[in-house]
Length: 73
Image 1: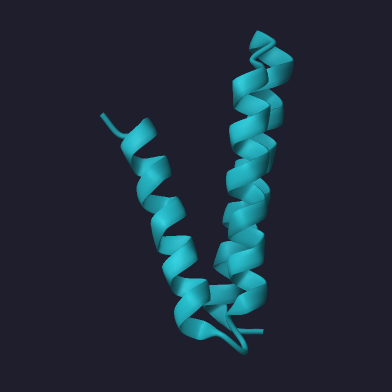
Image 2: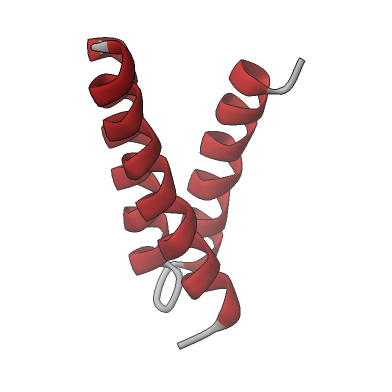
């Protein structure tokens, strides 16, 4: 398994976990929805990498940009 695929899997799982933590701590339904959607998309991107590298990388790049725009001041 390539390093990029492992990175996206870890990033996706942590994003889902962050959404769950936001829901548990603050009762934030948008946190769990956004975390789940973006996390699942990152996991899908990781699964696409072996056969459709460009699509997987583009998907992960767009999701990463969206998350950065939301959380980096």
